[in-house]
Image (cartoon, rainbow, N blue to C red; front, side):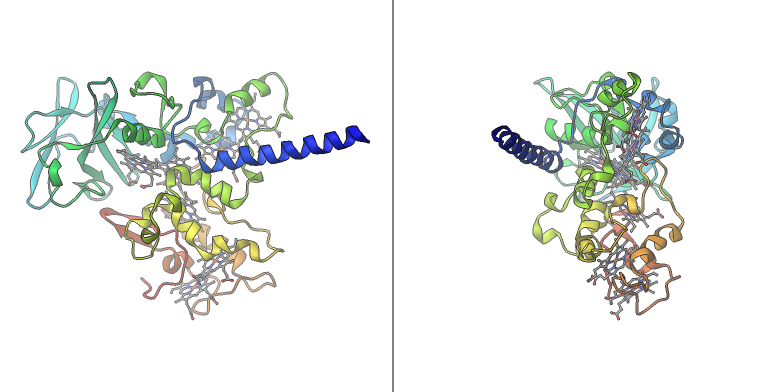
Length: 367
Ligand code: HEC
Ligand code: HEC
Ligand code: HEC
Ligand code: HEC
Ligand code: HEC
Ligand code: HEC
Ligand code: HEC
């Protein structure tokens, strides 16, 4: 009897402890983590055809490239842009096998070392320097290439380019530099002071989202097919969205007065928008509900983004239909209407590219 109690108490402690560990995992996910190269894409291909088949053509896999290949330069080569007020001209060209950029105000030209962004929305050129303490600092160029538009001012840069107008871009401190690469790469060492291009994968690969994938690979290879692994289905919607929000931003990354529909930058932060929606916040209020609302209700992170509106409209109607578990239906429209065009429209931000406003809500003026 006594040993039973000891076991019960030990079990309870374990539960509490694992609760704390889980809580930790999902609330303080570090933007940069360590993964062994073994876990990268190549090892997953053998066993997971469905998830790897289209993965390389999706933006996650292409969001960061070294700028030493001509194939990466196409959006910048021989391009000029006049940006800011007063206008400053920027120019990109090839010399000695590298891509260079300068403005009419910079003292000397800079090589482009990295291209950030898949090009699905935009691409920003980055020059990487080493400071006196041997740490990497990223110079994020003032100019960004936007799809269907060409070169223009980088998002978030002041119109007058501020105190930085004499430079090709804005210098980030070492910590911010590490965070930039942390959100656009896989397997970057958490302690890396220097961005060493050899030691991590450029882009977001399997092991960036599936933690401890290296253990899984060795378990599976040694025939232990029942060993539990990173199972997103067992997460609550809040835990799940928080993991995507590690990069797609969380409400806690913003100040309370920025969390308003008036904030024009919010549509860039998909996870913040979704978490502000009543659909997300009140999804548990109908106990008989079967559909859960997290990013995977609408997106498959292993494939390029679906562009057919009905793919998304269908998921709205799974909850907003006329059945007994219904959460209300649209008084304005029938069930075959294009829900997202009114409730999740594409919105302009501080840039020539549009972002989908993930804050699902009733809007006063419909587009
Ligand atoms: C040797 C074959 C093998 C390799 C290599 C492998 N897996 Fe798996 N994986 C499996 C099998 C088998 C399952 C199903 C296990 C089960 O049903 O419990 C699985 C399940 C999974 C799951 C689902 C877990 C769950 O509980 O839902 C994920 C995610 C996953 N693998 C990711 C990866 C990633 C990422 C890689 C590459 C780093 C990888 N796998 C490499 C065989 C493999
Ligand atoms: C390590 C950081 C990181 C994590 C974690 C992450 N993303 Fe992303 N995601 C990005 C970046 C960076 C881009 C921009 C890709 C580009 O350059 O176009 C992106 C782009 C996307 C896109 C847009 C693709 C397009 O067609 O433009 C979708 C959809 C997306 N992510 C969904 C998700 C979902 C769902 C999750 C969670 C399962 C997730 N992301 C987790 C960093 C991340
Ligand atoms: C907290 C994670 C995070 C950090 C830090 C971060 N990014 Fe991103 N980045 C994203 C996500 C998520 C996207 C896709 C959604 C979006 O566009 O905002 C993205 C998209 C981009 C794009 C594609 C254009 C676009 O807006 O879709 C570029 C270019 C880019 N980032 C450059 C940078 C550079 C340069 C830095 C560092 C100065 C940086 N990012 C830091 C997460 C991050
Ligand atoms: C942006 C984050 C992200 C990336 C990158 C990613 N996955 Fe996943 N993966 C997920 C999520 C989220 C789920 C759960 C899917 C769901 O809820 O429907 C998942 C599920 C899986 C599953 C289980 C399938 C199932 O039906 O549950 C496997 C296997 C898997 N991923 C393998 C991979 C492999 C292999 C790669 C690299 C090619 C990869 N993943 C890259 C986020 C990611
Ligand atoms: C998982 C179920 C679920 C999904 C999927 C879902 N919703 Fe909802 N939605 C809800 C719940 C729950 C509420 C809150 C109802 C209430 O106030 O009691 C809600 C509320 C709303 C509201 C009113 C919001 C407000 O601020 O008053 C609108 C509009 C809406 N949903 C539209 C949509 C659209 C459009 C989609 C698809 C893009 C969608 N919903 C997907 C569950 C869902
Ligand atoms: C109710 C459906 C729905 C959910 C849930 C959803 N998205 Fe989206 N998302 C969309 C639609 C619609 C688009 C626009 C697709 C297109 O390009 O036509 C989109 C596009 C995106 C893009 C591309 C950039 C943009 O703004 O157009 C990113 C990044 C993204 N989603 C991230 C996420 C993340 C991260 C989550 C979870 C926090 C999420 N989405 C949840 C419907 C959804
Ligand atoms: C032409 C724009 C438009 C389209 C398309 C549209 N809606 Fe609406 N929706 C509205 C407006 C406006 C309201 C507010 C109506 C009111 O308060 O009387 C609303 C209200 C709602 C509500 C809140 C109902 C309530 O009682 O609180 C839900 C849920 C909703 N819509 C879901 C949907 C779904 C699901 C679709 C797609 C099948 C859709 N809407 C298509 C404009 C639209």
